[in-house]
Image (cartoon, rainbow, N blue to C red; front, side, top):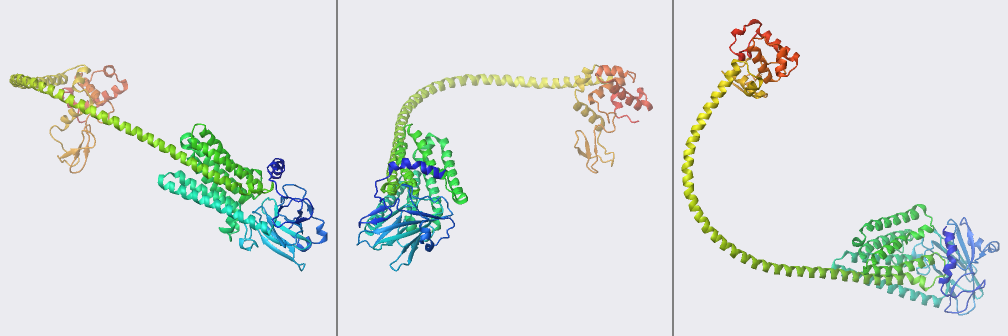
Length: 628
């Protein structure tokens, strides 16, 4: 798909090719000391599938016929097979005697390995090597792009290049005279110096601005500008010349590292400059996760698949395009920094596309493709700086507006406070007058109330005396009534309702049992000790000597029965008053209990009375503690 894309793009890209000098014969003629030639159809190509051919073989007549002249206008050559080495052959004729040598330079600075071969005056081959996989100091010419000096004979000089590249690339080649090369190189370094100087000024300016306003967006911008500088230094291999000249391995993986840093810095900066937190907060995770995905995807392609394809080239631009759309959405809401952000980003996207296509050798290199990215970065930084200043202006206006509102609110509060003070004084005066009048009236009322109080006090004392007397009479009357009721219940048949008034619940029954069983004192049935404490079960007694705990119903008629205690009391009362002759069916009807339950309880009482007579009992309660 990658090759298909390149072929389909040629027709469109030809419209963008700069006018550059080319030659149209089999032999290149160097005719001018200021000459610069970009080679097209003068390059002969031979593929070495196993990378085993030597220069002796390549230069032999047998191999000379195997070279194929390049028939394409552009691109020159693409190394379709990454395992192969490619041999290039050019023939240079010196048509101007003062020119003793020329400079051969590859326009793509990212070739992995290039070795040049040419014959000296004695007819022996001389060689030089350069490339991304070799340290920078082995280069004959300390130039970011791979450069060789080729001595020219009086007749025709044949030059061979052996090229090996670990990624798909083109082999665009230019020839310079020495004078032209030095002039071009000098101009390039001036341009790079100006560019890096602007970068440094941008970083220092925004860093100082950060310390002044303490806005994190300026730190993000400094980080982004620094990453842009590293990106261009790596893309042009100037970084290889000055920053990591002995670390050739960084050329292989540095692009991924720097591109990842650039994408991360761009995402952080974008989120803050277009104020995404305010306008589209839900898109913040989208930007972060998209950036992370692209970084991981490119890492897999670079380190695992190690195979470039069309999607790999597009992936780097995808976050910029998505961010462009988001910034457009924010700009439509009237946020001006987002509009300036769009303008700056437009320049960088266009220049990066052309730079990438030029590195893919889809058209001839020219001033725009070489310096377009630098210019775009500078323009972008200036526009972004203006966007930052506009953002700062908006923040300042918002703060001033907030301060104005705060000041207005304070003035209103002060005015309101003054009015409240006046109102408070007026109300206090009115209250003082009313309090004074009310105090006089209350004093008069107090005098009347005092006299009335004295009178009521005398009456209360009299009433208290009468209440004491009535309480004594009521207590005596209540006691008499209770005694009468108890006596009446103990002496004769009464209805269950009347009986239930005396023994309304189990609690009253337990109290009656307690008085009946231990009214004359407690005696432990185990050790005969008479001292006790309250047991764990209600109404039980625990011996203080042996610890034996005796239940309230132990050794009573009610021991072992599950019938409600108040109903057992009443059943005992009815059976006693009938001398044991009341039918258990009658008991069942009166107490609303089952026949079997009434029969069992009646039998239990009659069993107790086998050795006793009813006439010997002194009341129904005497049956409770009756022994067998």
